[in-house]
Length: 427
Image (cartoon, rainbow, N blue to C red; front, side, top):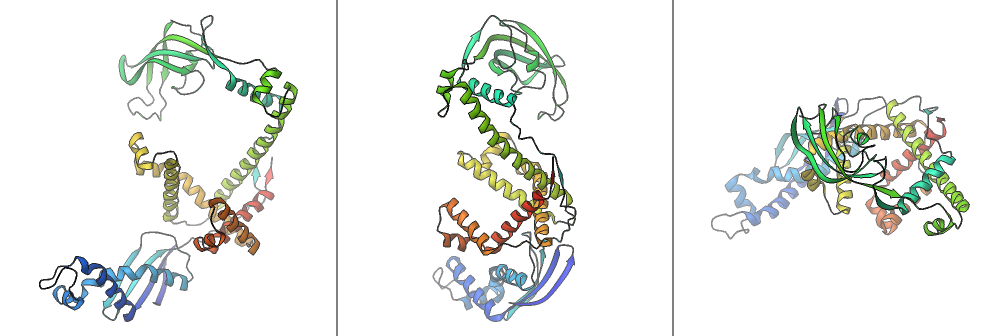
């Protein structure tokens, strides 16, 4: 491979002119011939036994050129990009063959390159983080949640529906006096306050009693998934068949012994809840600070970023989604069939988040550069060991699979994020 010319043709686009010598090209041609001869029929020869010279005489000596060039160019482009010191972005390759003969070929390729960005004012970012204060209200709320988990469901007949009850209802929806598809249900168990129905529907169930029939008036959200109903007023005829309430156990020492392995009295239990909440709220605050600092970094990044970086991130996000679904016995294709979603719609759905993530990464890499942040050998070894432990692989195997440069950048990005947080003005 000979890199003949490097030319920046536009922002984030560089054209390389690459020459492949005759010996390399001939080896590739011979490799392609061996792969394809098995399926070639030539009169007078058994299938797969025709000499290369005979095939070239019949179809032209260029018969294997195109496939041989395909065989060569990916590695040649990678080597040329390294020689030109280009950090490239995976993208559709724009390749143009300049000349080709049995003595080699020359081609030009346009590569999408990593953008040059700038970032300022990343120290002193103003952050209003969620509180980690453990209040008595939060403790009581947590205890009530635990009592609800341990509670029982009972049918009530001596009062109307309250928030938190389950109402067993029949309902039928009408738009402009006409019933609409999907708007009818019978003996449906609706948890009041769950937000599973149209906004306003559940609120209007409250206060009504068993066997009562009444009308609920609502307006569909503007973004409702059924276009003909989006933003439209609707009327629902409703009948309540049954009201079910969750009966909570008494908060006493016996309850505490049933739900806790560390406490035996109510006071001990409250202290246990306090300590657990303190730990959980501290983690939640730290996560909130990290997220808000990252979002601030994304907003500070300046530069022309190639669309391919956003598209690649969306692709990665869809792959991650598919992996999560496969762990649950589903896959992305089946999910799209069930929901009626298309890949294009999913990509659009993830586009905004992908753009933010790309900008966060670029911003933190730039901060690491500006602050001369570097990953030490100990940092790299620790990261490799973490991966080895996570995937239960031999350390040396992980090192052979994951390029050191990738680990190095990840460590430096993490350190840059720490710097941003340490210098943030957190309220």
